[in-house]
Length: 477
Ligand code: NAD
View 1 (cartoon, protein in one colour):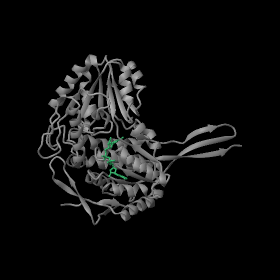
View 2 (cartoon, rainbow, N blue to C red; view 1 turned 135 degrees about the vertical axis):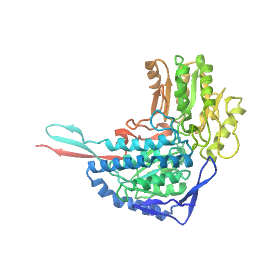
View 3 (cartoon, helix red, strand yellow; view 1 turned 120 degrees about the vertical axis):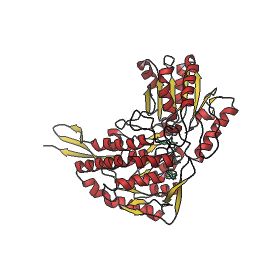
View 4 (cartoon, rainbow, N blue to C red; view 1 turned 90 degrees about the horizontal axis):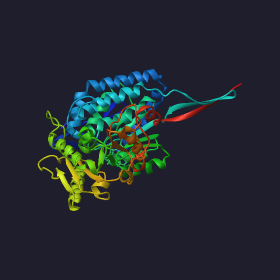
């Protein structure tokens, strides 16, 4: 059994202790990864610190060119990286590009695009004030060493979202992947180290404890975290002790509101993928659907037809577009939420029963007959189950959307964009999509509010988030 290694200061690093990475579709052990020690975490931070001044001092054009080479390396290795995603994280391979079912090949392609775009962006000096007496400029400086902690649902893409903007502006990085999806990320970082100077991007690996050593180390200048709200709170506490700024991309419980004038047939596919992308294991997936009573039955029927036609299986097989749930903890949560809905008298429109056998397979499940306050509505399911709730008054749907302590995304569906825009403006979420859901873009800032976190990633705003402003104030005359 192969042991995959961390990359620190450009070199491959193992550890005395290792853990197995398992394919959740088959139970097969894919390989081993190191459990980094506390001393190794400190070594990785020290390597990033040593590399940072010369990396930041490079001319901008040179850093940009190197990052374009990173994108080429990702492209050249996209097939192997996608296979790691499918075997470790279990999203099916699927197609490539923006119009495809977003599977593992899409994720590898996304890594390439989310590298090219920040590489092509600039943060020019801004003039905050100028008159005859003075000129005040805002320059953007890297923080120094960025600690990145990643989740398991989009293991490569989220790592890229954390790494690439950080290094684009002159930071260096130590990243810890999720213990559920470690090897693919270690491989990604090993590959991009082929073109980057040593120490610019480093990895450590292991359980949450390894992450806690990383984020509490005084050698870290900025923390990028994507994961659950509970872990986010613990990291925010550790960051506060060292006065370190953080970007917190936490869980969501996105509402999708279907207005009375929407066209159920036309929107069904968009709604379906908005909810079931990556088997629902996506932060900004639609997790509660509020449908006006006048189109309720038609909408449920249209979604049911799509759900029942979608092939589920081992994502390495051709034609499969849905895989299993990624891990037992998440599987148990989905089972428990559906059971609680059944006990509350809900209607299971389709699915609702695990199929048994190897792998954490759970069928796509639509549930009606629930109201706000039911566990399946109020808790983030992060799996292939969607509660569909009937409403009569749009005001009630807006109040429902806003009543939880979550505010990552939301969507409004209507034939009248202006009407939808008016509703969208009243929803408490970092992004409100109209007639689409979860359609992130590398140029468009993305981040949550309320319990979904703070700070944004992507685009120029995302680059600013990994810098601190420095004012240069010049007296004139
Ligand atoms: P998680 O919080 O359990 O784990 C995330 C990472 O944190 C893992 O690498 C883990 O090892 C590490 N960790 C655990 N304890 C730690 C500690 N004390 N200090 C430092 N690191 C620690 O989350 P998960 O189950 O991997 O991911 C699922 C959650 O992530 C969902 O709630 C989902 O909505 C959210 N998510 C949010 C976004 C977003 O952009 N907002 C994107 C993807 C996922």
